Image (cartoon, rainbow, N blue to C red; front, top):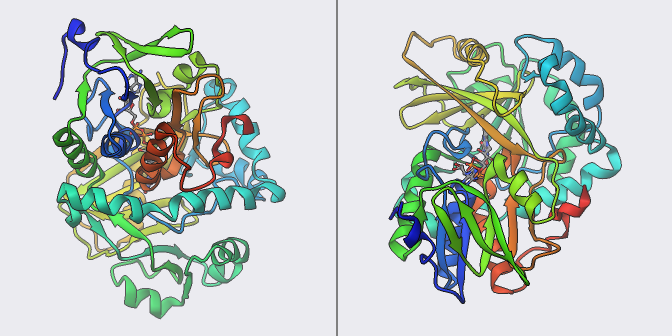
Length: 428
Ligand SMILES: Cc1cc2nc3c(=O)[nH]c(=O)nc-3n(C[C@H](O)[C@H](O)[C@H](O)COP(=O)(O)OP(=O)(O)OC[C@H]3O[C@@H](n4cnc5c(N)ncnc54)[C@H](O)[C@@H]3O)c2cc1C
């Protein structure tokens, strides 16, 4: 239910067990479900409908990977980065104009790649992602959209036949954390995915990973579920908070104030300024990514497949073949650079030589990225009734349900399922 009436907006919430969530992407909608299930009275504030293409949660690669534990910044990234940045067709893009905006974040990113830190990051990533299906499954079953989830594994493909055997650090990091990894030679790779180009000579297969066939429909379905349980949406933009003697008492929106007892910030890449009003500074950047959907194309691809060297993902989706990739560091106000999406079309033709012409849909979204690949999930240090749940970067779809459960435990005052100290903002 949406409500645009400002005088009613202030009355939306009953005092006592009321929660106001800012942001209705994957994270906000999962928080809403778990909080409502825990007996809270929830209003979610967002100017757009859950599952809308404006959300980062809409256009991602759909990877649901409980074994995901490799940080984006690994030792050696400093040597690799100049080459990635200078290649016009490469996966990373930063214009000189945007350098002052991105530099402080990039320095922290590089600092997080030190050997003594990556193991801790991997532990924090797996602790969250390992619970992906445990916390998604009940919501998805209740929402009646189990058809959206496939369990066909995740595949990394390489042109260099020796590459997987050389990936000793990341393979060990995965195996040390209980993730199954299979090394595939050329014939095993062909057998698994016959439509792949013969340029690919080897693969790494992670059989326990999954895939969502339509992230936008998933978020919209979980939102309908939340609404059926009684969660309400206020279609408005949050601008800040009003404070009482014990912390925030209302969210100020462009449609009037919304009073609540608890507040959750889950506004993706726009969370930073709201958190700052609660006394918390998080180095958050919009790491822009693109997708192209080749409409109604089915090359027979089964698994979510990542070309490791060129850093893009091909995913079989409802409606066609989706290619995602690119990390573009630009100011949020900068217009999309659609030429970046053309690179993905070229990559698709390289990966699947049998591809014919098709209608191409293009999309751009901003990953809410912290420099160390892990989100901020915490009760704010100064205001115990305010919770932060953002910064999920490349992993926000897979980590959303677990984050939702953890947030409901924080608000309820229960012991959280996992230790949340690695996700505190004070690490920065
Ligand atoms: C190309 C690409 C591929 C990806 N692939 C994967 C993948 O395979 N698996 C995976 O797990 N993740 C993937 N991701 C990352 C994932 O999509 C994000 O981490 C996730 O969508 C973040 O969810 P969110 O709810 O935090 O943010 P969003 O989905 O962006 O939602 C935030 C919401 O907050 C609202 N909002 C913002 N400001 C305000 C305000 N002031 N007031 C009210 N509302 C506000 C916005 O309107 C929006 O609806 C990918 C991302 C990209 C770009």
